[in-house]
Length: 190
Length: 219
Image 1 (cartoon, chains in turn yellow, green):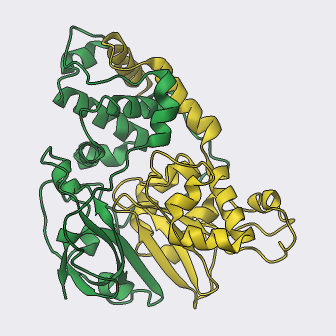
Image 2 (cartoon, one colour; image 1 turned 90 degrees about the vertical axis):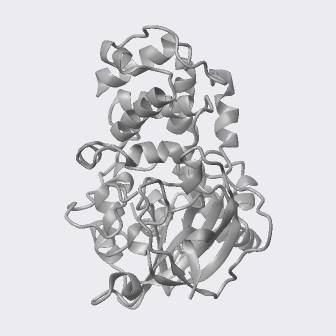
């Protein structure tokens, strides 16, 4: 595949259809600028600021844009909040829709048949693979991203995190917790 | 189309197997394939729906044997050929053999940050009021088009409830085929697991999709 992709880039460059430096810039954006730390800051702010949380619930696109996280595959955002009763899980069964602007590029498993096939029929089984066993009474809501809305899970704020700053809280917010395949880390845990 | 991409509820693919400390890319060519897909898309000759349809139109055996960036690269070749930018012979030889379609625009490095920050919003004004309101009971249509659709098979012909009325959005079923944006209202529709999966389904599970208005009928 490496040779095939290199050949394609050569052809497109020779024809003046692409600027190889533009590709460098695109790659650099997702390697160094846009990633799950963006989403973690959104979640930490929602945990710290009830007014922001309310705004995020009502109009996630605007609330996230206020932190300057905008753009491709984040044009239309919806935040979904975990509660003691309900756990949210996001999937795209049809392709790989994912909120790039707050989480960056999706991991391989998110785009692959095992997760995409299983998440809507056996989400508890999927969560076990992520070492997450929820109580049987916890309701599970799976959001299949079939249109252009992109979903960000807001995990529950962990116990023992009172008094932490937004920066410290953001450290507890993992990428998987914002997809729904994990929970936020407890303070002091690895 | 009932293609290989429509995976919800399929079985036999094995464990999810999340990779610990997964790198963002697993090879340099993946970076180029990702960047080229975005840069070529920015020429403006096809839209995201046509792009998705090109990926799901790969032969099922090819689709399942390919990694995701392989799927992207193969679909990009299809799109470039379809729109006259490259020819099969050029792909075989690995070099340009002459001019093809001239691009409407070329994404330059200095414009990448702005282009990525802007994205490609797909919401559009729709004349008239939404047909459905939150709380309405609906049934999804049962259809099996050979063309692009975003109504997954597992959610066809199912009873659900409208949870949210969204904006008007470009209709992928026509837009993927150059037949116009024809925006429609989109709704978040919730189904119970027993409605979708029947006997033995988890009663604590609900699944939602985002559905264009013409996918839905009152129930």
